Image (cartoon, rainbow, N blue to C red; front, top):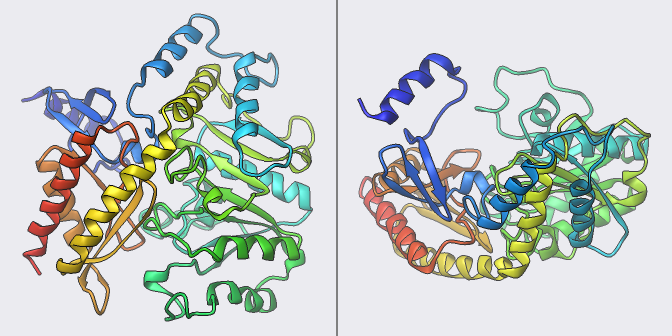
Length: 435
């Protein structure tokens, strides 16, 4: 029995079945864009810990900063005894946040916890309770964030009831437009829908905030048209509603900007971040307009581990790496090469329905038929398995599970990128033979 097989047997005995695994791999170590398993097989990593590792596995500046901090202070609880790394990272987050307004930042542990705190802050600031989220969104796995999320299985099924005063409205999913229109001649029905929503579902006087991922991640890497996000911000301003940008997956250079919302020149009132903020050390943040962040009273937000000193020093180094290594530009370069390759393949391949992306956040939507757009979930799973057989790790996305989700680490070398893209191309073509 191999070491991986032994560990899998132990896992099945010790860990609940709800913790599922899409690969049989156990990592022994990792560096850059490569994971080494227990048998010393090397895998090219194109899922990056689901968007956590934009700066790659175990980046040396981050590891060194963590090691140095670990010798000084592991924990104290910032709300009782403070420490400098929390302030250092908060200042940096305020500096790099979109827009020119004065910002403040608080830290938590996960993306879901950041979203929970953003909702708390918004409700307190506006003295209203309603929250709008969008179809195809993902905001977390806590009770509140499951209520916001728009994918039933596996995230919500059997876990209700969910908190009240949460409302859904269709997203701007142009490939599968819920209004059966075609952009740009559609008249932006996805914005016009708010007129009916405010008349039929909830009055603006009841809505505290609207939360949206600028690029919907779990929903299938949905890129909205140029008018959509600015249009939402205008609706919010007109109706005294806060605009929350959920940048948990799309932030930290992934889209070619430090934060994806910058691609639409929108300044959010509140912004949630996590995943790549600290290169794998658990950390999340809420950054927002200072007067809104100051609305809740002392002791009403925060938590025991939020802004742990190890995580904060890691976060400072991640921002330095992105800036010094010009990883926003690297994301654009990766994206251009990837999109060019698969848009060309789309013309001749019968199962590629859509190829979309911004920077190095790219989705390839597979279908059984290009006319009907019937989702090809099984073919998507086959492509992922074929890639894994060739030592490339890839995952899916989309409410139908039919989108190949490319989250290529921004430190991936040109050779690794070319090799990985070739594996994906060949795997798609092999799977297409089944159609």
